[in-house]
Image (cartoon, rainbow, N blue to C red; front, side, top):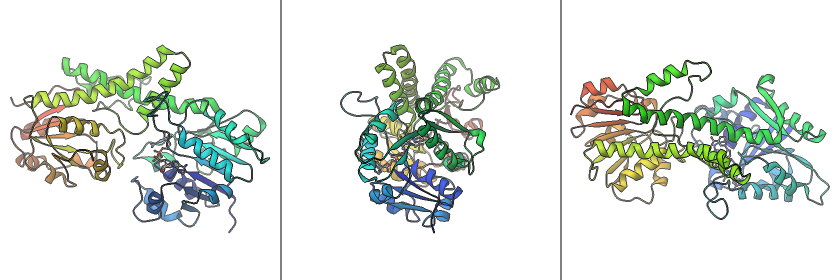
Length: 458
Ligand SMILES: NC(=O)c1ccc[n+]([C@@H]2O[C@H](COP(=O)([O-])OP(=O)(O)OC[C@H]3O[C@@H](n4cnc5c(N)ncnc54)[C@H](O)[C@@H]3O)[C@@H](O)[C@H]2O)c1
């Protein structure tokens, strides 16, 4: 069967896989191919054991795979046979040379662009799906269009706003889809071609068109604003702990102001994930390179507060457990950076686990989906570290529990049973404020939440 459009996505990660699965499901008349250099990942996408966990993803892939959705390692064939190429490769923080620790490392993006150029023998639309510094499209156009092949590439920006853990829901029902292009006739035509894909399921008024620079910068700005809200409420949580104000009550009171709104006001051990820190630092670097020092320092503080919140959490555990955790068993409930994902990139749990191990605690990690990644993240630590899928087994003989991921399963455990199996006095440090603290206190726990007065029996 001939397909109406041939779409390729380069990069089969957390964004490429789910995004293309939704496009394939919503547009059965299009052929969608996803390629990756990672053979193991592609093998997993073609199996029943997908490389990432997202609610609803497996069902969607089963419905479309090998009908109009294909996972492959054949970049060359994929590039040659497509008219539209989404690029969804990783853009991590640079670890070397100029801008190390802040700027985005664009080597994977540039390699991809050169590969597209090498294998193409017809004009194509190249879509920036990865999060990129503002003005990247200009460099990409230069690389792609300085060719002697008499073919033309139009670079369009279509940043992805999905949240891990709710990726399918976000992709099926997005708040908005943003598509930016050059404002030339060719640029606008390319933009319209990408709009045509999304109109199959996204209401037209939620598809925003803009110039390409606004689109690139909007993605960085959205992540900076989201992270800023978390750091803002976390900074106030520290003040609550000093003053007996309750962060839940403060968040509720300010969130009812329609100008502020109630979302993203949950105090916690801090934000994680592959994007917030990386994208803010990238924004900081861009501001610095334009000489905007004040703007750079303003956004950098969002990351600093987040790091401080994580170290404050460890310090709080130490202080309250009589200034030593050496030799004490501590169960970490959750290792993923948020609920409903197995992703642990930049998870606060990594930092907390490392801090406790440095204090010679015996750390037991439990998580419904993230143990495989947790093992990789902590592979340098051999002593004092165990992984246990069952939370009841994880807490046996422990002095403390630290809740680090807001999985529903931790709200529903039998804490009376857990209390009995622990060493007394038993401590709970709720880094996500998800547990019923009064109930836990009545059972006998000493309860420490974020931004609330502790409930202690001594
Ligand atoms: N994870 C998120 O929630 C999220 C949300 C929005 C935007 N983003 C952005 O999307 C981009 C991708 O993020 P991700 O989380 O999917 O990353 P990821 O690391 O999960 O996936 C990227 C994939 O690209 C592959 N790759 C790299 N170079 C390649 C090449 N030359 N050819 C083929 N494949 C190649 C890698 O092997 C990897 O599998 C990043 O720029 C990120 O900032 C991520």
